[in-house]
Amino acid sequence: MAKIGINIATGSLQQQEMIVGIDLGTTNSLVAIIHPESRQAVALREHQSSSLVPSIVHFGPGNEATVGEEAKKFLVTEPQQTIFSVKRLMGKSYNDLRNSQSFFTYKIIDDESDRLVKVQVGDRFYSPIELSSLILSELKHRAEHILKTPVTKAVITVPAYFNDAQRQATRDAGKLAGLDVLRIINEPTAASLAYGLGLKKDEQKTIAVYDLGGGTFDISILRIVNGIFEVLSTNGDTYLGGDDIDQAIVSTWLQELQLPAAFVQQNKALAQEFRIRAEEAKVWLSSSLQYAGRVGDYAVSLGRDDFDRLIAPLVERTLTCCRNALKDASMAASQVEEVVMVGGSTRIPLIKERVGAFFGKKVHDELNPDEVVALGAAIQADILAGNNKDFLLLDITPLSLGIETMGGLMDVLIARNSKIPAKVSRQYTTQKDGQSGMRISVYQGERDLVRDNRKLAEFNLTGIPGMPAGIPKVELSFLINADGILVVKAVELRSGVAQSIEVKPQYGLTDEEVEKMLLDSITHASEDIRLRALVEAKTEAGQILDTTDRFITRNAAHLSQEETDATHRAMQELRAVLDSNDKDLIHQRIEQLNEISKPYAERLMDEAVAKKLKGGKV
Ligand code: ADP
Ligand code: MG
Image (cartoon, rainbow, N blue to C red; front, top):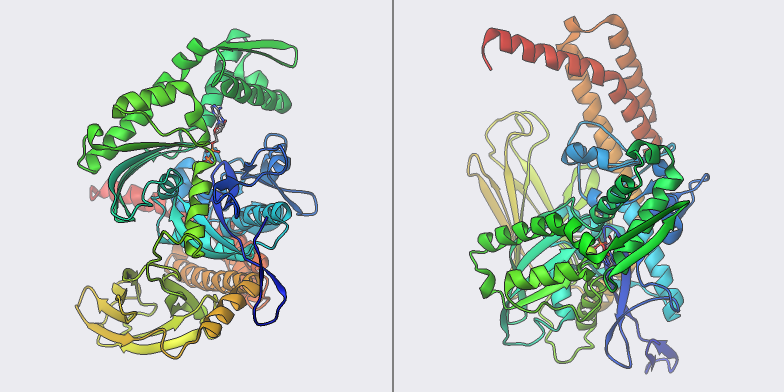
């Protein structure tokens, strides 16, 4: 299916490389391409099967991972080993997830902190990046199998509200799966592209993208001007989607059959069966008026009218989000010119009807709503590949630009393939009390450790007034102008101390060198990510040892001898593995230390609050 070309230099046959579009979804993921002959965007599927791959990873007894439909079978029977909704964990700390913990049936490490979450399966620890990379690897292999050609380049979509850390995590997951991620684009932008919106040069339009998936609802209001998409507002509900509809159907059936919910919960296989039948009924009712089926010995049925009544409150909630999004964009529903429907759940007739009525126009539902984001990503990939001659490629940065952070890690500020001009700022702070200077080293490249990248410049921000560690706020900004000149500026916001430097990142760099740097980052991806994880684990361990040490010294009087001894032992055990180069072992020991210090840390906290309350100071 891929184009075959002849390499003029060598005379050998050369396959033109295919850049794929990937929708890495919360519930389902898939790959799409632009068909080389028909030039149409198509979702990849094996024979007659579905293009959708459930975004679920199951770990077997020997820690071997399976992804997709096979993994989904274990969702209810082996909840601890079956990881779903990984996308919800991307770039998140445990504190971010505190209120939604009951949603996850697998073990998320509770370290009561702002550090990034990890998932524990047996004695192994996985970062959301590693878990997502397993899904992306599966997609890559499928695509290669279907296309019969290597797939190494991709455009991956993310929700419009994803922040920098979440986007970077998605890039890293791609890299770890052996993919060169050419660009991360917003899901609503991709969906609009799939409908040809934004592809005409002088078009100006306001678009609403209504996305109801398996577990999340997103509404985005976009404005396109001359091929550039601007997100005017986003709104939604991160816990509202098709799964809730399935739940509602199961509850109705249980009521009708007079089965107590507890009875079904005890019988996991039966609960699973009920859920499967409920989803089947829902899908069936998108095109028929009556469903009848069986769950074990029980007969179940549902009519379209009852179904519509059941989901009406849920639909109403999504419309409230739409109202809020319009308000944030200072816009009336009538000013929206196009409405794009995205997500499997928008196949439901009542939803199309109500959304159409809300915006007062016919909605776009001509394409498969669960494929449309991937189709748009494929269109973007094709533009980046330079195949779409109607579309001008804007100037982009060929390599990522960033600075050195703790442990020699590369912190990317402007990712490669970003449009020029671009400006990104990020805040940093000091590590030592009274630290008066900060060295800023600017690097270019795709590797995780700066020692493997190209150093562009270095300068010192000096004269920071003496403050405790963590208090100064140093804002670092990277501005790359239309001529490709990079201005790096550092400002300590509390004192106003500032320093800046100018560099030309492309100076003295040939295309071959850029190509080699990209290639290196892919071939070394797993090693790099392993090293990064290790450096992060060590940094984390160092910080925990410091804080614990300070805490027990300061509170020595309030701790029992056993508590102090146990803590010292756990600290010693953690120190002993710091040089082991085994990040899982380091995490285990961190966990162990946390388990020991948590009870007394909580007790002291409670006592302090109680004391304050008594003193009437709170
Ligand atoms: P996500 O973007 O969250 O990864 P999808 O866009 O693939 O998810 O949507 C998945 C949801 O769509 C599931 O809850 C599924 O049951 C639902 N769905 C798929 N087809 C239909 C249909 N015909 N009618 C109603 N819901 C559907
Ligand atoms: Mg989706």
